[in-house]
Length: 356
Image (cartoon, rainbow, N blue to C red; front, side):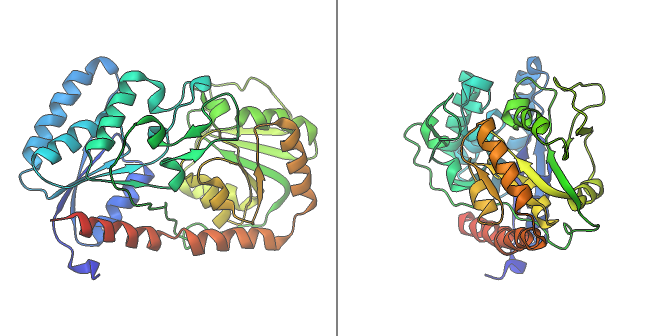
């Protein structure tokens, strides 16, 4: 396929221009498509009727001159785009990312944990022409990491009788941007999370586990990025360093100087940070959920169950097994299996296939 000859206009619906969205828009525009982003701002909730009306008017106007709709994640913001695309007989593609495919009542996480949001999510994926999950587990997988919630996760578990065809398109990363820029510091662990101040994020992102394991390794430093300056962690430890959100250049510096990266999430579709960290030669330690085992492969360590004893053993083993080759192998795994070029090719091939 000669993507340079691609033509046509695409509406890209999203709730924010996140790094995920920016990458895909860049892929599409570089290939020759004209992309119109439409934002759906659903906070505050009392403005939702006005937001829906605004979205309807925008779609009504843009559907006359655009050939396709792409939506980042299923949810309320995806409902009108796929329904109106269906009425206008134009293709719609919903990219599935994680929270739109999950239900974790124990931490009040996932679209399907809320009845109304779950209904909108189910309808948006059922009426879409095609789905593009970032990993096969977002459709269905047996969940064994923690016993507090459902033993199976994935959108097919909760959007019953879902028959929409799908194509798996993994996230992609630029190895020329994310690379080690300084020497590693021994016995250093890093994790990056957003929304730590929210009620469910400590458990969702595994921050609580890090705070429990850190006292067992007083000679190590555990750095947590994404902690607001006005927020205090429930436990204050001398070997736990907290930093606010960092920009891309600052993250590359942090990835580069830390030996290990920890991704101990209860649910995580296809996480960016662990892949970026591995490109900067961090040795990964991750939870056995969604894409994380496939991301790590044999280059790091996998926490099979959400258990502090198992994590303590895993951290001990990781410290004792450190070699420079492990970080290099982690970088090679991401560069070879999850490059931005691979996502670009898969996305453009699917878009061209769906366009009339």
